[in-house]
Length: 192
Image (cartoon, rainbow, N blue to C red):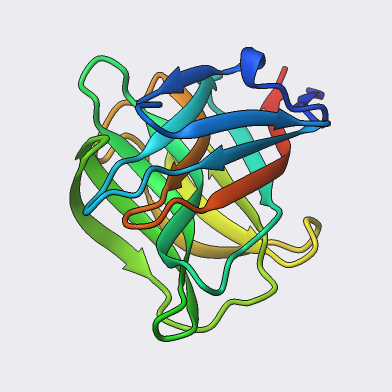
């Protein structure tokens, strides 16, 4: 069985479905996508999604600019159920107030309601810009990398534990500041 790779190295906003844009600015910058979150007093996720492939699959992204000055800027990947509004997000969270950079897996009952953090590595992760979610048809594995080649599983859980997603994509939650996140890579790998 061979792998079918859909690499979106030329990212364009028009190639995604936007969920909860609101007052967020989403812009094409050459071959990249920039999402500037709205300055809010709480959670307000923005997703750029594509249809979820049949498992097994791998989806990965590269988060280009991590801001040390942000306050709870979360950026990464989302598994999103458009029918229920529920999601599972895998993010790099930066917090300039305490100069930290953590990896988080969170469950959200809507784009504005966080249910809880189900994983936080709680350590400094400067240098990690690559995130991926592996669905082996039994489990979701949330993995991170500094080079896009060598991956470390941060957390694993049974698939569809919190929601049954029908889309996957890029995610940003600026929480309380209007800061930009740039994505320069998005790839979906399926077996076929």
